Image (cartoon, rainbow, N blue to C red):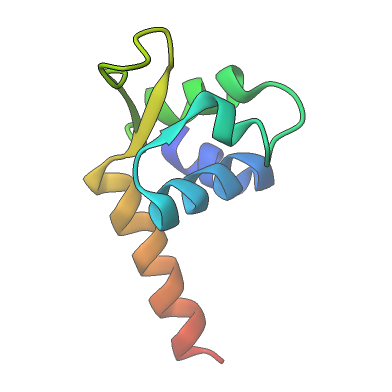
Length: 87
């Protein structure tokens, strides 16, 4: 239920799509596409198993970095196939 709720929210879906397209993404980079509440939105994606918080780069130990999980990747790819099939 948490996964589908996260996917139904436009901002969370946009974040997940951004992670899918861009790989590992810093909190700072996500802030360029989300005006407010990056941590809250990403937290919901993490709770749903769609995204993960990973270790920061060695040269920037204070930076928070996120990555799409295999489950999140499957969700985006399934949606993409469904859209292409019905286009």
